[in-house]
Image 1: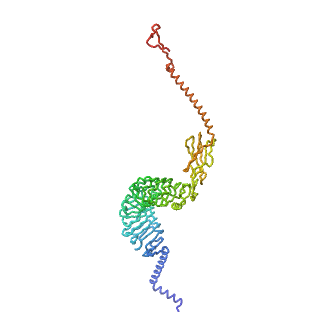
Image 2: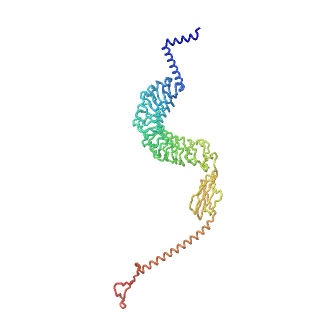
Image 3: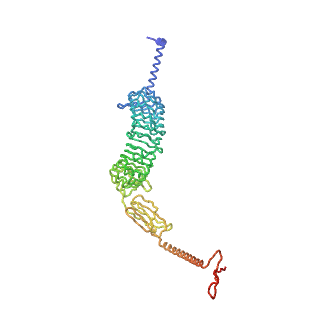
Length: 560
């Protein structure tokens, strides 16, 4: 048996005689050791998910090249989001890779050969990085690219670097606030179906004409106040979806030439739809969305050209009334959204759409009275798609429209009265629906100051009027009838006192007029009799012969 001392001596001699061999073995052992450590670390940073033929690898790393050796060759989706990759270099040879994602990686630069070894790639998503220029990809390596997403980067110019991606169908550039220029031929060779330029700095969209036969969806929201739309905008295009939300649009004349299944114009200060009625036609076949556009009414002719529309959204506007024939020509309408407006009752125009269309009418200050009884039908309530809340007197919505209401003509809850101390008349009227009250003062109609004192049926309304009248009468009416009541006051004695006062005024005025007439007559007489010149009175005297009765001299003698 070999002793421990002999074994150690043998081992020392072996190392001493074979220094090179032992050194090589130690080096290889260290390399294998650290390679193993690296693979284990990479595996901790990556997650591989296999779903049938799709293999998705998600990694979060600060060293891109460290994970390349452990990537499976048949990976189809590689997600490097939230990694630290300032420069995206050349990817390893991944012949089956179809989708590459690198969101929020701090990417500032992309090498030209980044995707040279990924010939099957179809989708590249590089959202929310710091890219300033669209990469000048090698077109031969991206012949199958269908989608390129560069949203929320710092791209400043859309140049012709994309022109070689002839199979590109989806281009997402939204959120690039520094993007302000587009080259005229940027879309010349492309066949884009979806283009998103929301929240960019573009003032206009040049060079879009080559996409006329291909573009299906255009999203250009939140570009105000710079984005200008000409009347020939999208002329000749037929889109499935056109979104121009929140673009400060107030002129709808460009719609005259637009053809789209869905048009979204939400959050624009449009104000009125009257201009649409002047169009010979308006090609909106599916949906027209005008949410929060400062609309105040819907008139008969406003929407007459939307003969094919199936969904109409007019919610969150300021609509107070809808005319009777506003929706008559909307034969295909299936959904109407009038929620969040200022309607006090469900318009008859809406009633005509039921039960074929679904109506959304919640969050309106509806007044509950007997005119709303038709809403009690269960099938109609289901079509209205909302709990119908009635507006209380103070503007809140805390009374539910569950039960029917009985109509009644106005009646005076208490006798009307007149307070001579402040010359004010007051009357309290009960009616359903609520009565309108006015006063007659000496036969002249005057409005009144009214307030509601009971919000449940029958509604009580108190009205007051102040003024000096010989006769005063309170009149209350609703569509059920009209009532009148003369107030019990001391107006007759007041009238007699006023008559005596008027007679005195007439006598005084007559006396003054008589004195004025006498003065005028007297002045005219004296003027003919005497000539007054600068304070000297001249008398004309003639001398006559007594015998012959003829003047002695030809000229009149004048004496002072």
